[in-house]
Amino acid sequence: MPKNITIQKIIGVLLHRLKFILLATLLMGILFFLYSKFIITPMYNTSAMIYVQNYNGASEVNKESGKIYSADISGSSNLAGICVTLFKNSDEITSLYDDCYVDISVNQSTFFITISVSGADPQKCANVANQVADKCEDVFNSFLQYGQIGNIREAKVPTRPYEPSNIKNTLIGLIVGLAASCLIAILLELIDTTIKADDDIQEIYGLPVFAEIPDFETQGR
Image (cartoon, rainbow, N blue to C red; front, side):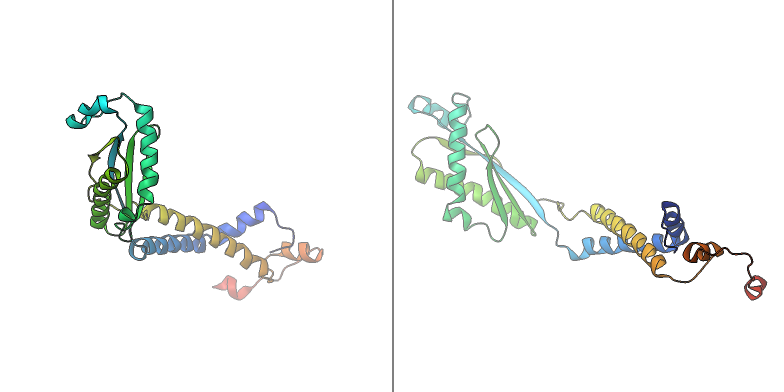
């Protein structure tokens, strides 16, 4: 390629090596898809939900009925935050994680606590989430002398992994392949010192070309 590089010349180089670029892009997309499909371990996620409610002696009927009332939303929300800290630091609960990733968090401005579990085994994820939810009730009753706790939703066995995304990884592969192949095509052209046209001589050496000897062998083929 001549020393004076322009956008038009770069586009010309890319068009000249279009087959290589398309092939490399497609190949990289296929490789990323195969890696995502067969190499990356699928990860599953499920969750259980519990609630905690702050109440006093006058609202003991709430505990007996098993219903949640809005008598003290603010107090229940504060209690839920305390419980999350308690649950995260309880050895009885953390011992149930069984190599899964467990996140215990309060739904913002509520007294609902979500127990989210991620792992490679969908059945194990569901079991861990439900076991943690049950153990939270035991820990709650062991440490707190007021309030009530209950189960709202049990964790179900997830049927589909949340990652990897084969479509997303394939698209990434196509983008990487396109960028890499374009870069390689430009670099190959830059390191190529052969003269392909009479304009190259004029641009490289600054000499005008008055005549050209045709290649009769090539033309005769």
